[in-house]
Image (cartoon, rainbow over all chains, first blue to last red; front, side):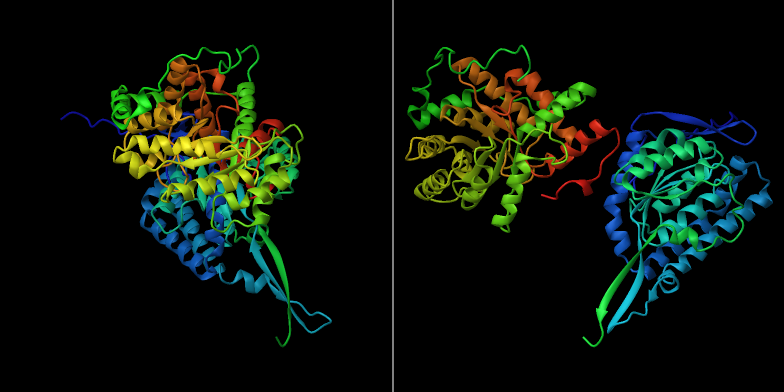
Amino acid sequence: MAARVDVRKTYKLYIGGAFPRSESGHSYAVEDAKGGFVANAALASRKDARDAVVAARAAFKGWAGRTAYNRAQVLYRVAEVMEDRRPQFSLAVQQSEGLNAGRADKVVDTAIDRLVWYAGWADKIAQVTGNANPVAGPFFNLSTPEPTGVVAVLAPQRSSLLGLVTTLAPVVVTGNTVVVVSSYARPLPAVTFAEVLATSDVPGGVVNLLTGSAATVAPWLASHMDVNAIDLVGVAGDAALATDLEVAAAENLKRVRRAPAAEPDWAAEPGLDTMTDFLETKTVWHPIGV
Amino acid sequence: MLDGMPAPATPEAPAGWDFSDVVGSDSSLRRFLHGLPGVDQVGAEARAAQLGTRSIKTTAKAFALDLAIRMVDLTTLEGQDTPGKVRALAAKAMRPDPSDPTCPPAAAVCVYPDMVADVKQVLGDSGVKVASVATAFPSGRAALDVKLADTRDAVAAGADEIDMVIDRGAFLSGRYLQVFEEIVAVREACTAADGREAHLKVIFETGELQTLDNVRRASWLAMMAGGHFIKTSTGKVQPAATLPVTLVMLEAVRDFREATGQMVGVKPAGGIRSSKDAIKYLVMVNEVAGADWLDPDWFRFGASTLLNDLLMQRTKMTTGRYSGPDYFTLD
């Protein structure tokens, strides 16, 4: 019997709930940890980043306007769908990061648990970080956290799934919409994650995923006047690029989560900063007795 | 106007073809309009799609964006329009981008007749025109004297341009002479008591004309009746302006100038929202009608949201970074 012909895959971007090819038409070969060919991924261009920002902006009002309880349910649903796809994620992590099956399974489990953990925070973060402020007058003075807006996330280069989920989930759960630039060399877990998002209840445009080079795309996101914040963890270790991006981001006073010197240990439990870094505090005064 | 381009041939061109015998009776008009060559719909769509693939970059793009801004008829035709809103819109037409003095003004502000005086007060002699819809816009379902009174009102209030709608019911049932005479009558009503004449744009509402053949017939009808501009749509009916429809109209004005020496303008309106779309139209104007039409006197965009996208693209070209809708006014 003749050997079956390989089904060679060319993955696409995830923008506004659809899977378009890159506007540039470019793609690049993705290799596994040993240097073997795995698949092609779309190479995002600056115009894809622009389109992704437009999609994220369009989705922002609806997503931020949902109840926190509902956002929790949506995120929990993402975890459910990931659970169903555990073997696929595990294989993708093995190929991308060169882990053995046991360790890859553990990474996937941690990523799913992390998503559930953040889903639980959706309707609690306002209680923890919000406040009833004592004021010298007959007023209720209440501070509540509000989402910042459209956030660009440069996902970690090394931790292709756990790092991605740990940087992405806290931004989305509080009501922001996101443009993610995945790991350049290890994009496939992110692509699979995008397929999970598309088949769960996350509205189109809330998460937009670009595969490609952060060095090419990130300057356009950092200088984009309609992006409200940027997480630079994906350029950890590249101090020169990180500085350039911070300078570009200053033009519209973006919130910047600065790049660490090296990627942190993603297995460690993240603090609340991952969420509060992309929240604004709204304070209202309300007369007592009205 | 592009450098080195010949001036429009309108005034000094030979009188050319005399169509007075054509428009003499309903039957001769029908014979003429139905004798026009049929439009190859598939061909028109393919041609429009092909022209839409041109890549316009750098200096050509900068030129196209500025030209498109100068061609915008900034439009608001809502029941909820207030004097305050149309005044704000008029101010925006004069200075679309207040942060950049090199940004050109829009061509005109297009409003309902009762808003003309408010707009005129703001625009003054800035050079930005006041356009007013008239003749029982958007349906055109009213008696002729009502339509004419509507038109005279708008002209008396100071409108520089009148956007009239044709009677689609009469057109579709083949009463071409009635449509023709209505356009002629409205054109006469465009002359104010002091002799000032408003330009007349004739709206076909191509979304209701069903076929491209009808678009071609309506174009010739309106041009022979003396319309200064032919306009696709009211913006109230879907589909509004499309590339193939505009292609047919551009062919008509080109052929009409060849036949008579008279130049007529074209205005697609409704559904043009992005700079990319606008540039596709400009490419088509240049390729089909010719560079003479690349001027706000001969080509206009009826739009409201388009202007903001043009401004965002323009800002992107001057600053090198993407802009956002937060930096421009909503209307």
